[in-house]
Image (tube, rainbow, N blue to C red):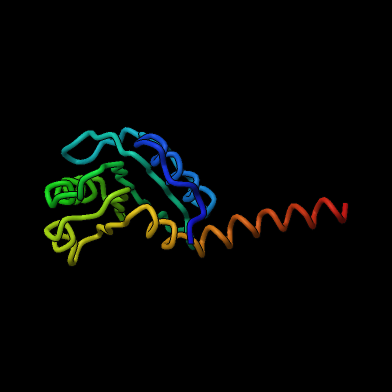
Length: 144
């Protein structure tokens, strides 16, 4: 199920990814600069949430490409995520992934998602958080 219209460009993809994560309960920053143990890098989408007093950090690399994503892009994201101590890293694309890219994510914290599968992955969280908030406000406004 698609909950957002198709992104028009790379910046639009970042913004839409950020909106979905924010509406799913994450605190989101677009194009955030982070310092790791060995690197300084700009992250397309940085998102955090706190579950049972444990901080959970994810990063999203957004690729609005016409060609399939190669393995070296996945390797770069893995290096960045490991250096930053991230819990989960998503590589989100408007295209597809080369077979080498798909194979290189085994036993890693990297998940490869198309724009459509990203929306499907976060649909339940988005739905519960977004509509629970909306419903709560409707009830609050009608009974005050």
